[in-house]
Image (cartoon, rainbow, N blue to C red; front, side, top):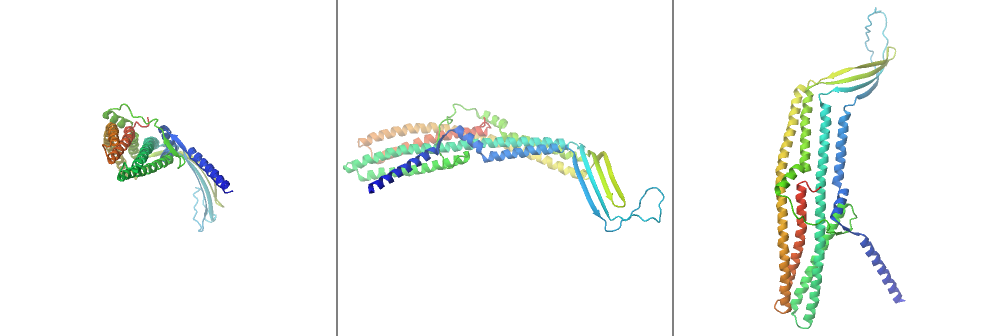
Length: 441
């Protein structure tokens, strides 16, 4: 009976582990760089916010156009007159001094009016054009944010790839180290190795296990970060695919990247468009010096009980409006609009300088990253040969255990360094493209 219970428990545990393993397998996926970028763009909260800003800017254009449409209003009121009003009818006929004017205690009236602007000194035109420029600027801002989102996605992919590669290399090194401990343990049991040398090997294995824990922790954090960016379940295990991570075979000159940035960067275009909108602000302010003309029409109805009734009083005409205060207020508005243009011109010059500096920094960073790859690849060859020689010496009792362990650590470090250097170089190249305004291409 006892054996049957143990068998059932074992089968249940095995079944549970099988289901758990299946669930874990279903919760993992291989991700390429292109897939990561596409998912990030589709789920980016900042880009969704930009979309709402574009819609808001589009409605501003519609609002500016609607100012061309006629204004219409309806007004009605009922009045109570607690004090008897004085009424003197100027009818042009003979007035009977003995006649008593009617007593008026209440009045009712309604007015419907329509006004269609005919001439506004360009205010409507400048308002529509300015709204169009601002909508264009918002769209360019969204394109600029899009390139930043792409770069962030690439950066997250690179971190994921580096963390995954670190786990692979550390695991390989850990297997070698564990096998070495087994071999040294046998030697120590047979009295062919000092106890101290075995302890050094075991200590190195423990340190590698700690490094593996750190690498696995970094990998999990990188997965969570990418899952949040891409809108995937938080605990999805992502396996990076090397597709799309190839380094470029050649790049442009520094001057070419500078010209690309000054001509193609969306923030440069957005600033230029905003400057055009600000220039229209000057013209709009100057239009206050001129009157506005509108076609007007209306309908009036009134009823004063026991005294007067008015119906079908329809009127149509042309109205002119001129604000006299504009003679001394408009100058300040023009100065404010001109200052805004001047500020945008200064911002444009500052952005030009920043772009040139950023391009130089990114270009030099990429060149340095290429040199690092060459140095680390050479270091891997040297570390591999050093480990081989040290291992041969150790096998022939010509090198100490400490020298062998040091050679092994050096080899692992150089392998990690060359992997990270290639990944960093790929990121540096894409950073250069983003600053030059070429990443979205």
